[in-house]
Amino acid sequence: MRKTDAPIRVIAEFDPEARVWVADSDDVPGLVAEHSDYATLGDMIAELVPLLLLENDLLDDDDALAVPIEIIGHAQTRRDARIPA
Image (cartoon, rainbow, N blue to C red; front, side, top):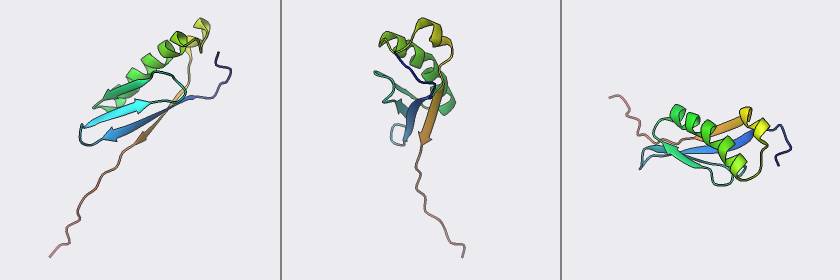
């Protein structure tokens, strides 16, 4: 069982080739989610985390209504800057 009030930490990284956000977590066995929209990915994670914690016997049924989740997003872009003539 989960014995802490610390938030579940989820890492989301943007894949520029696939143009989607991909998320997983060391705190939630089996969590892998992807979506092109970061906000929608957050909604998906909020639905999946309690279900996966329950499925892995890491959460009591009573606690499933309030699971704090921290989503950390990483994205990297590269551009060429044009110097005005």
